[in-house]
Each structure stands twice: as structure tokens, then as C-alpha cells.
Length: 329
Figure 1 (tube, rainbow, N blue to C red):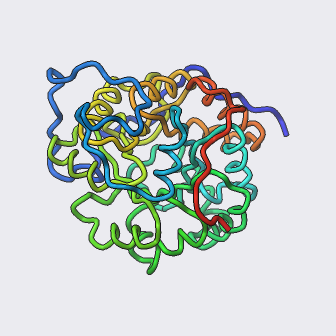
Figure 2 (cartoon, rainbow, N blue to C red):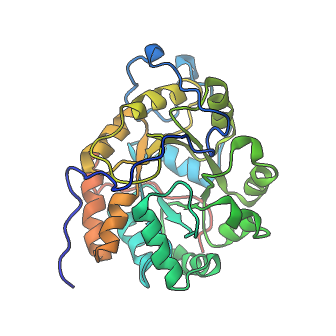
């Protein structure tokens, strides 16, 4: 296989402009951004298990995903892969794990993704063209589960969740620990929270820079596993710098919960991952890695990329990662 360019130390912007309106996943009402005049300096991470006396209320206990993340004791690294993007796509999971990931986010490809930028959409299109379905991805995950030592978090859209009876139970059977549904507002969760809890799945909710103070408190109270902090009002994709709003948002979340705060959307380079780890408790890296996969990078190549991210966040890749508790196979 010909060599492919490595993950850059600086990132080019995603070619499509980000939409100006806020996603309905975090605040379906008209966006009311919190005043930047109220923003103080961000708190350095990680601060998992923070003293409630510092202002954050102790969060209700989550499941296996949250326990593993809290036990890590370091800035958290969560790389992303689109399920089914290649025949050997589960080898990327193992490569991420070997490189020091604390969890892995797996995207279930969807034909009309509202929050995904061009790179993730292209990866989803490639997976769907290969005949990938929810069933094939869960079967693949179940096969590789005995070799996984880190939690798997599935990201998908509400249409796939609600048209599939027993969705959370099926995730758990495949060895999944967490679920992200970015187009499902907190006030439309319905029975999904109870279904996820019954199956042992941590339902991760999202907040954005425009999320109001009251709504942010509700989302943080109901999220499990971690709170997903969207760094920008827009879609996923590589960006030249981590948005200034990321640190401010992390500060606001930390003020109301001690649950892990993971920054995503636009975290593209090792330097940006390190910055996200200082502002919050860690980072999700998606588009930058999937661009490499789309360009032909093999799992071994991605192992090197994730190791570079891990090292930039202050922990050498050789350091042992947290292991998810419970039966995995």
C-alpha cells in the first residue's frame, strides 16, 4: 500500500462552511448564547471526581463507560471510526486501543446525518455502499469484543434508534457501553433514558456554546458516561484552531457537574487535543482520523496517529489505559 500523509500538526479547515444556526440536538429553542462577559478563565483538566465544594454537584453514578473514564486519571482520548467504512474496520478499533485510547466512538452510518461534515458523510456513504447495516456493525463488534479492553460508544441518529426495538439491549449484547444520539433533544428522550439504563448503556448528551444556562444544567444532570461539549455551532470537521468557545463551554459545564467533560467537533491536531484536555477532561477526534482512513491509511498508520495524540495530551502511548468493567464477550 502506498504511504499516506500523516495526521498534520496543523489542520486545514473543513471545505464546507459550518451552518450558522444551532443544532437542535442541544437546544431546539432559538439559540441564546451565554454572555462572554461572564466568562472567567477555564479550569485545567482533568478534574474527574472534583470536590463538590468547588461548585460542581456530584453527578449520579453512570455505568461501565463512566466508571472506566473516571478511573483513567489522565486527559481522556476518544478517537472515532465509522463502522463498516472498510472490510477491516474493527482493526482500527484495536489500533486505537493499542495506541492509548481511553474509549472509542463508533459511528453507525446514516443516509441523512444532520451534524456530520463532509469527511464523516463521505465515510458513511462508503460504509453504506459496502452494504453496512446496524446488524452487520453490531455483529462485527460482538466478534471483536473479547479483544477490547476499552469502552465502545456508539453514535447514531434518532431514526435508527427508534425504528429498532430493543436498540439499547442489542448494543449491550454486542459489548457497547455508551450511546450518543446527537439529533435527540433532552426534552424528547422519552423512554430512551430508562431503556439505556436498564441495558447498562450510558446515554451521553450534548451541550453547545449556545445552550442556555437552565438547559445546560438539565442536560448535565441527565447525561451519563460523560458530557459531550460541542466546541462550535456547526458540523463536524477539521479546523485550523480549537474554537475559543470550547474552553468557555467546558468551564460552564464544570460549574454544574463533576461528570467528565469531553470536547469534540473540530479537534483535529495533537496540539488541539492537548488544549482540549486542559480545558475539559479530554477530546473526541473524528474527521481528522477518518480523512486518513478515506485516503487509504491502514490501521497501523492510524495507530501512529493516535499515539501522537496520546503523547501530546501528556501521557505516553505505552501507559496502560483504563479497562471497561463487566463482561465483554
